[in-house]
Image 1 (tube, rainbow, N blue to C red):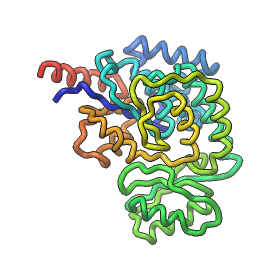
Image 2: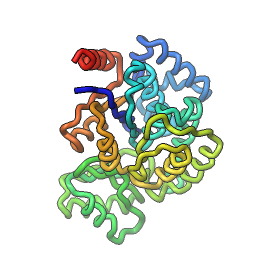
Image 3: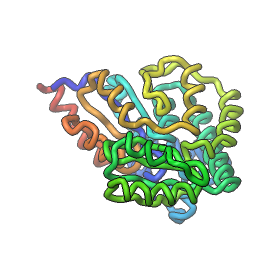
Image 4: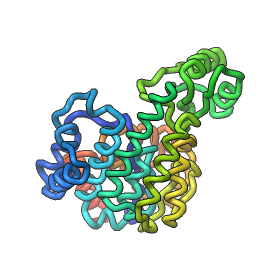
Length: 317
């Protein structure tokens, strides 16, 4: 099997953990330099929060988002040039879409860090202004979840993440989400799990954050990606900077169409899929969406060593 075509998956919020990236920085000078640079760009000690801070501090939206982007980009920079040059397509889940554009050269590192820090602040502020929440509905298909959300509720509730077949996250006002959870169980869902989040992400309740993000993006110079990035909001291939800007804004109040994103990537015929960054959430979802795909999660030095072995086998074939 030739590995000349590689698809990249970039994780979103929820993948963070204390200690993330420290092993990379210990072995790779390029990773250590990125953490130092990130502190200078943001004006606070993000490295300490990532490596030695409390879980509560790291999980705060305004910290988690730059932390995950930083770790994902550190992994990207530690990959061999021969791997990065084989990038055929990329997609990131929610926040991870910014990481994908950073890897593709659409965003500069300093701009990307400041943008996701600002995005986290805006999302947190919107969550405080109008209390909202999210819940994972397990065991119902997309049409059934749409019917549940379309019922008359005392507030807003919408599908927010189409993560995998039978795994859909809903988002909205607290009372409406709680009522929709009960209705989903009545409709045959196996589980309806409340999520520990600070707001109703990817729903109309993020409208205020969307306006602020549009202002922040207006001041940033975006370039056309070196390889296509699949947008969450449209599940389409993005090859122009103007489309990237518009779809990053739209993403805040639109559902993450992850299943469709993976299908779009699949049409590009990658031979290998790499999830780069903290955790293995997207690898798990990928196995539920396309079980026949070769996927590896790359988050630390040992994962990079294992990848080197795979590439050596491919080159020797």
